[in-house]
Image (cartoon, rainbow, N blue to C red):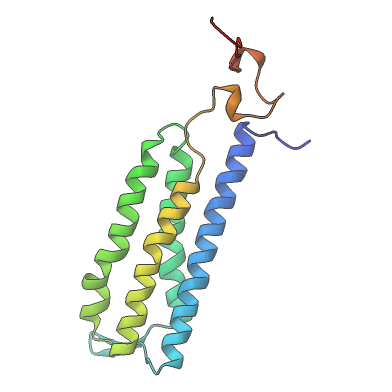
Amino acid sequence: MRPSRGTPAAGRRSSLAVVAATVGAALIMNLLIHAVGRAAGGRFVFTNAGQSMQVDALTVGGFTVVPLLLGLTAVALTARRWPWTVIVGSVVAPLLALVTIPIMTIPAGFDTVSAVALSLCHVSLAPISVLGLLSLPRGTRVSGEDTAAGDAPASNRTVSTGGNA
């Protein structure tokens, strides 16, 4: 039997779907940006401790998926009890994505095409993360207006008297 709308199991499934879709969309977007950057002549090479290193698709994927997955999961797990975590995350996620451009990408010494492409990867995470966060279920549903008939006990439904109460 499938859990009905408004039940905790349905909420977890919905949160899982939102997290998976958001992370998947971000990964696809950033891999496309990386591919376009490579096609435009970006080498994605930087020097670290005297060693030449390259940012490949796997690196872009890891730097996209891991922080986004951790942050969205943390908010998804707390949003029903503390809905304000969605708003905090909606500020913190894009801020971290954008502030890491001058902290990590620009100082690394990439060629211009690579620096622009990697910066765009960071920029793309801002709206994607906010959309994902705002799509997460949050708070608890008490009113019958939020659930389909039969999903909530009668004691939790809002009853209209049709006139003066």
